[in-house]
Image 1 (cartoon, helix red, strand yellow):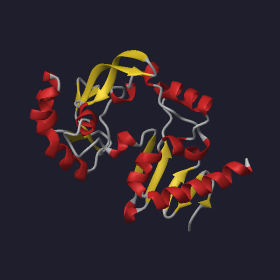
Image 2 (image 1 turned 90 degrees about the vertical axis):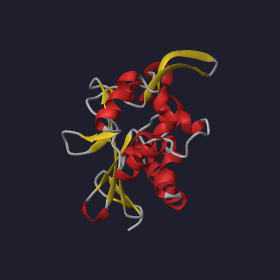
Image 3 (image 1 turned 30 degrees about the vertical axis):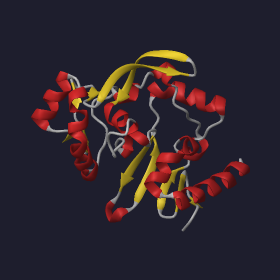
Image 4 (image 1 turned 60 degrees about the vertical axis):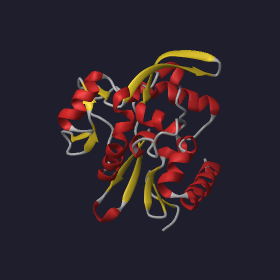
Length: 208
C-alpha cells in the first residue's frame, strides 16, 4: 500500500515512516551545536556489516589523521563493536567520541566556527580520497532506521535535546525533516520513493 496513513505511521511503498518526519521542522545549526551529535551519548553510530567492511577498506586513508587514542581503540577492538543493546556501532574513545571524529575550525556564512566536530571519513570522501562518505545512520540523522524481521523497514524521528537549535532553525526556515534529509533519503531509498514521499507529504500538509 502506497501512502497509507495510520496513527502516526505512514506507509510509503513498504517503508513505514513516522508522521513526525513530515510534520516536524529541522535544519542543523553547526554554528550553535558544533556537531555534538558525534560525541554525545554512550555509544557510537549504528552501522551495518556492509558499512563496517567499507570503513575497513578506507581505513588506511584516514588512520594517520585520527587521534592517537582513536588509533589505539581501533587497533585493540576494530572500527566497530556491539553495544549493550546488541547493535553494531562505531568504536568510541573514552566512552564519548566516535573514533572518526576530529575537531577543526570551519567557515559558515562568512562566520568562523571554532572547534567544530567533524568526521574524518566524510572529509576524506569530500577531498576525493575515498568512495565511502559515512554510515547511513549519520547521514540520515535525526531519522533512525529500524529493520524488522522479514525485511520491513521503519523510519523514526529521534528527538534529542542537543538538537533544539536545529529544530528552532528548521521552524524559522520552514524545512520539514524529510526535505532537510532529501539527499541521504534518495541515496538510501531511491528518487522514485522520495517523489512518492513528497506527494504524500504535500497532501497531508495541505490538509492541516
